[in-house]
Amino acid sequence: MITIAIVIPVFNRKNITIQGINNLNEAIDFYNQKSKNSFNFKIIIVDDGSTDGTGEWIESNRPEVYYLRGDGELWWSGAINLGARYAIDKLHASHVLFWNDDTLCVK
Image (cartoon, rainbow, N blue to C red; front, side, top):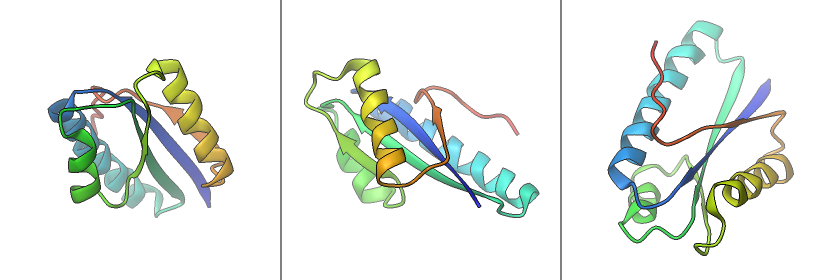
């Protein structure tokens, strides 16, 4: 099975992040049905110090999402690097996809 890690850097956009995660999960479910689950998708959120409750919402409502916290000094490129290293070293992902929290999938 192919493991695809989707790395999403976020910062203080809780409502947009929620909508993005929900949409991405719907798309993953849709494509897994079409491909007969031949892909293993892992979502990694790298939160660079949000203060708007983003992290708390993810931890409470999306336990399947891997949640990494930054210290506010990562910015986009640091968050991508941290997420990619985690995907490869910890999740043993064969592919890493960089995603923005405001990107919506269309089926």
